[in-house]
Image 1 (spheres, rainbow, N blue to C red):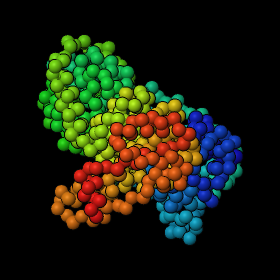
Image 2 (image 1 turned 90 degrees about the vertical axis):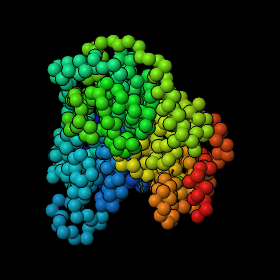
Image 3 (image 1 turned 180 degrees about the horizontal axis):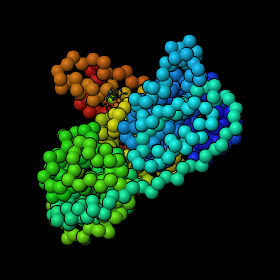
Image 4 (image 1 turned 135 degrees about the vertical axis):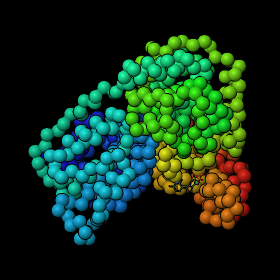
Length: 533
Ligand SMILES: Cc1ncc(C[n+]2csc(CCOP(=O)(O)OP(=O)(O)O)c2C)c(N)n1
Ligand SMILES: [Mg+2]
C-alpha cells in the first residue's frame, strides 16, 4: 500500500472513525483512502478550528483526537491548538506531510516549504516525530497511540515526508499495543497516606483534570471521609456539583483558599496547582498535603507535598477508599456556611452574567457539556455559576488561555457525544477568531447552541488597560450583526432581548436541526465603556 494508506489503515486499526482537517495538494494520498477504511473527515474552515475541534472531541470523550493538515502553513495553523491541548493534557495527534526525503535543508522553493517543520512542533508537544520510511508508519502510529493512552496524556505530532505518502511498499499493519496496567503506588506510601488521613480532623479534597473518569472514586472517598470537594476548571463536575459535599469549581476564591489553609489534610488529585487556576496564588497549607498524580514530575509542580502517590487516579483512590477509616459526619452547619460563601463569591464575580446564566442553569440536563472560550462570561461567570454533574463536562482552554477555542471545541464535543447537550459560550472578540466554523457546524447539522456574550470588544483587556491607567485603544470592536452573520453561514441566529429567556431559547436550540447563535448584548461596565469608543 501507499504510505498514505498505511497512515489511514493504521488509524482505523486504532479505532479512529473521525478526523478533523483540510485536504491539500500534499496530503491527497491520505484523503483518497479514508472512505475505504471507514474514516470520516470533518472539514473545518481553518486548521486551527480542526485542532480545537479535535481537542473538544478528545477532552469530552477520553478518545484520541486526530487532526490532518497539509504541509507548511496548514500545519502551522494548527500549532496553537496542539500546544493548547498539550498544556491541558488532552491526547491530540496532528498528522501532516513534510518536505520530501532528501529535500535540501536550506530549501529550494518547494510549495509550502518550511525549513524544519518537525522542529517547530518539537517545542510545542510531547513528541514530534518524522518517519523515514513507509514501513515505519505503522510503528510510529502504534507508539503514538500507546503513549497517549498510558500515563499523562499529551499532544503529539507525526510527519510523513510527502514522497513517502505516495510511495508503495509492502506494509505490515500493527494492532494497538497493549497498554500496561496503570501504575499503582507502593503499599508503604499508601499506609503513610492512610495514617495522615486517619489522624486529620478537617480534610478537603481538590480534584483537577487528572481526576477525569474518577467520578465514582472521588464521590466514594469524599463520602467515606466526609470531606468537601473543590475542583479546578478542568476538574469541574467530577463530583456532581449538586452533591452535598461539593464546593464547586472554586479554587480561584478566597473562601476556598482559607478552607484549604485551615485544613489538617488536603488530598489533591490530578492537579498541577497551576497559577492559571489559582488566581490568588496557591494556599499556604498548614496541614499535610497529599498529592495523587500519574505523572511523577507533575506531583512536585508548584506545591511540594508531604506525601506523593504516583498512580492512576481512579485505581489509587479505589485502593484508598478501602483503607481509610470511615469518619464522623462533618459539622454540617460549618460546611453549609462554607458552601454559601463560595456561592456568594461566584455570584459576585459573575454578577454581569448572573441572570442569563441562572436561566441557562435551570434548563441544563445532566449530560450537559459546556465548551467555553477565554471570555469573562466563562471564567467569571459560567465556571462558578453553572451546575455540572460529571467530569469532562467543562471544556475550557485553561493552560493556553487561547481565544477561538469554544466554538470548534463544541463542534468536536458534539460529534463525539451526539446525544449530549453541548452548549458553547463565547465572547464577541473570541468568536471572531473562529467564526468561520459556524459553517462547519451547520454543514454537520449539529443541534449546537452558541451563546455570544457581546460587550463590544476585548472586555478583559479593556479593563486591564483601565486598571493600569493606560490609554485605551485597540480593544473596542465594531461587532457584526451576529444573528444575520450566523444565518448567512447556515445557522439560526437569534437576538436574546431578555436574559431570562436564555434558558428556554437554549432548550429549543438543543432540538433544532442546525446550530443556533444566541446573541446576548451585555450591559456590564466593560460594555458601557467599550461602546464609548
Ligand atoms: C489567541 C489569543 N490572543 C490574544 C489573547 C489576549 N486576550 C485575552 S482575553 C482577550 C479579550 C477577549 O474578548 P472577548 O472574547 O470578547 O471576551 P471578553 O474579555 O470581552 O469577555 C484577549 C484579546 C488571548 N487570550 N488569546
Ligand atoms: Mg468581549
